[in-house]
Amino acid sequence: MATDQALADEIVDTIRTWVDREVMPNAAEFEHSDTFPQAMFDQMCDFGLFGSTIPEEYGGLGLDITTYARIIEEISRGFMSLAGILNTHKIGATMIGRFGTEEQRQRFLPRMCDGSFRAAFSLSEPDAGSDTGAIRCRAERDGDEWVVNGTKFWVTNGQRSSLVMLMARTPDDRITCFLVEKEPGGSFEGITVSKNIEKLGYKGLETVEMSYVDHRVPHANVLGGDEGMGHGRQYALSALELGRINVAARSVGVAQAAFDAAMRYAQQRETFGRPIYEHQAIQFKLADMATKLQAARLMTYDAARRADAGQRVDMEAGMAKLFASEAAFEIATEALRIHGGNGYTTEFPVERYFRDTPLMIIGEGTSEIQKMVIARKLLERYPAE
Image (cartoon, rainbow, N blue to C red; front, side, top):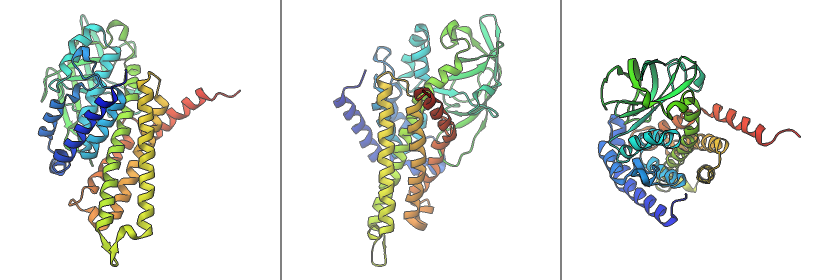
């Protein structure tokens, strides 16, 4: 069901005002120190954003995907890492809401609404990224429990999360999703955060390697119960359709911030006695940037609206993610060039946008993976006569 438009606009306007007032002036402090933005996180909890798409019957706001995408765009315009804190949680909530048993929905979703019980998504491994079929993390049945052994990579929120959506291979060689409950912070009964991954950008939140050694998970925590056995990969890829809309929205937000910065700078910076905006070379750059930004936004909203209508959006989400992420990188690069030498310093935010945008090209499936998905769907939709 679509969110009431007036309510949606009010929520997005509230987030936009907060981003302008609180996030943008302080983002650089947390980003350059690579410090978790606790105060911003607390405010996101107060806004109810961690329950934004969880149905009202479980205590959430019940917002539609389009409104959520607009919120992510605004948050990313201020500090893209904040959207990362939220996105992995939403993937977990989406998977439980769509594929969990009613007992699992009742047990987990109400706790996930206020941000105190956050989720992480754990699919990738050191040797299994886009190739999900190469997963080696294994789970063996022992009575009413499963014993998990393996190593997971690129786990955003892994250390601070209370719930991990863990994909593991079972003895029948199929992939199942396990709902791993843990204490936020350090080790917990066979779970160790074995490595914090240092990154080019996307700073201020942890991205970790997690190791499982004889960790026990109750059979009741198999996502979907007995019927969910072996369907973990399917569940994960379905949730990643919405994850790609999220990454597209993030890309639009960062691209908007880069474009805004370039427009301001072009009108303030003077060379040869006039603002650089008056030079045709700069005008052409900004015209291209604005056009790509508008196209990326429209593609993202189109994918979100189709998802709200209950349509499969693997192709549209892939297209939006592909175009928006590449456009964001190009726009951030041009913004840096418009700033000249100043763009290469930490005194201006464009260097952060330049470092953050490559993540969107890689995350939730690289651009090359998106093209493969799109090409497969094209063959389905346009078969030879």
